[in-house]
Length: 332
Image 1: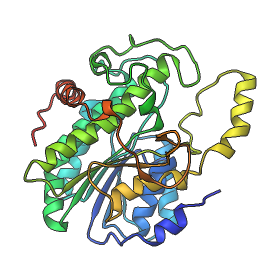
Image 2: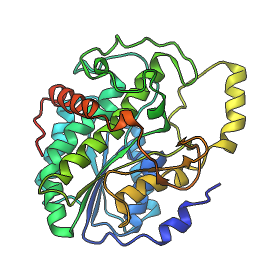
Image 3: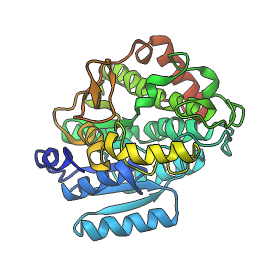
Image 4: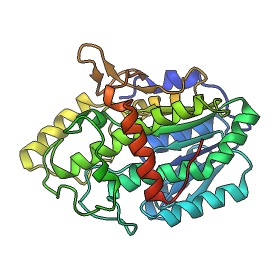
């Protein structure tokens, strides 16, 4: 059941004159965000996805549900740095400015494998390629801020950022160690697949806080760096996982009760992308005061950062290793 999204959307401003780019729009929160931007009359909503039957079907669905929306597919495989560069070049050749880059796409608890570039598939998909995309499109975001008075760089994190085994980022996950990072033992919220995932989601929030600090100290302070997490949302992110018959049955029974809809899960992401009140350097999502931790469901509110999310050494390590991996110098 959707409880929050419909009322929240009513208060959002129109996006006339603004170009929005979103990665991972074939389903879930990314699809909802793209649809919302189309309904709010964005000049163009750029859909960055791999070419697949899913991307073709989701584009058709968006055009059917929002006939007046301008949805523009851009081929972008986040497991291939060259594909990311081609996508950025295509956008740069067709648009003079960008209001929002929403780095939404993500995969979860996938096998311990390397991309063609040699990096962990989860880290390259969820963070490294988004770092490269942000660097490549930064001049368009600067132009967007000049035109509109602000621009947005948005990352979509997860509750999982709070569950890294050692409470912090580890450099080995940012190196060419794909296929050698913990193996494939399937344990709910544990084992190699989830430990790699947690690192990527922590990378999303640390990157946001590092961006915020650099932007605020520069001439580009009008570009906001904002983050979000969806809580527990009913999407297809975990459809490939299996923990055994009884555990799967329990999850199938409990998740509809504990988790929120994809629409409600997208509120934090949409707030970060569109809401005039969204602040730079803030992560929005469900929050539990009693646990002082992110929550499975509820309103998208500011989540206070954990010390390891704003650790200067972690920020510096992330920036250095991400530049090295992506082969880009990202100076702000």
